Each structure stands twice: as C-alpha cells, then as structure tokens.
Image (spheres, rainbow, N blue to C red):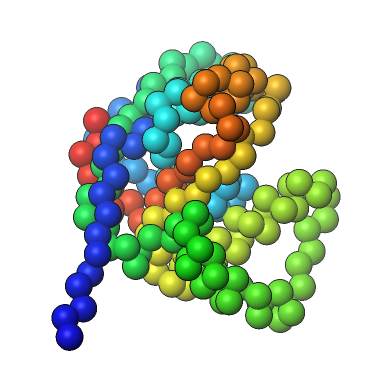
Length: 189
C-alpha cells in the first residue's frame, strides 16, 4: 500500500513589524522570536487578515516609541509557506490534532508542578498555553501551528478596539499562524 504524504500551502500570509526590522528581515530572513508570552510561545507570527498585521505593526511601533522615545514607521511583510507536509502542522482547529495534544500533554500535568507567581489568572493561562503548545510542537516536530484565538480588546494599544470591532473581526476570532521553523518561509516581500 502506498503511503502518500499530504501537503498544504499558505500564500500571502502577513506579518506586521516596523520599517527597520522589515529591512533586516528582507535581507536576512525571519528569526524566531523567543517571547514566551505570545499565543503559541516562541515563533514567527503571521495572519491571513492584512488589517490584523497592520494593527500588530502599529502596536509594535507604539511599544518601540514607549521604550526608546523613537518614532518608527509600521509596515507589513508578506510571505508564503509552500508544500509543508501536514504531519508538520499542529492545527488547533482540527479535532484529531487536539486529541493528540491532550493525550500527550495530560500526563505531564500530574508529573510536573508549575509555579507562576506574580501573574493574574489570565497571564497564567496564557503562559501555560504557550508552554504546553511549544513543548508539544518541539516534541512532535511541528513546524507550523495554526489556531483560532479570540481577539481581546487592548485599550493600551492605539487602534486595538477599532480593529477588534471591525467587520474583519465580526465574530471576534482571528486565525494565527505561528512558524516554529523559519526554513519553511518563502518569498518574503
């Protein structure tokens, strides 16, 4: 019996950033962010809604200005993920992937204790989710994580409420693509 490998392709995924970082990315490629407080832990984050990428770019520029006092311009980069084997994708929207995730993560809950002091309950949930998703992705050689997440209004960021209330987000759900291996990214522009 022939075991065919299935593949997926995602084109024109958008990534919001600042102009200086965009130049570096175009010249050198993407680097995995080590931020563990993101939806799926360390990775490179893309969206299939361009408006969300522009929102993320403006948020990043606001953070840079707050930290450095330097005003920077937002921009959006586009990239493709071509012919990635489906067994390298962890799709949080797929029942079979969630069942496998639960089966492999549940035993860890009794084996390890977690101390997340100094965080509110929401921060703890985000940190644990990021930790478990990253652990699962690494142990199972997942190079791309796809998930639908609820957009939380974040009033500290300019344009956040506007974006979360826009028609693009009518249901308040956004699809996030978290790349765990930068080698799967092609055609950066």
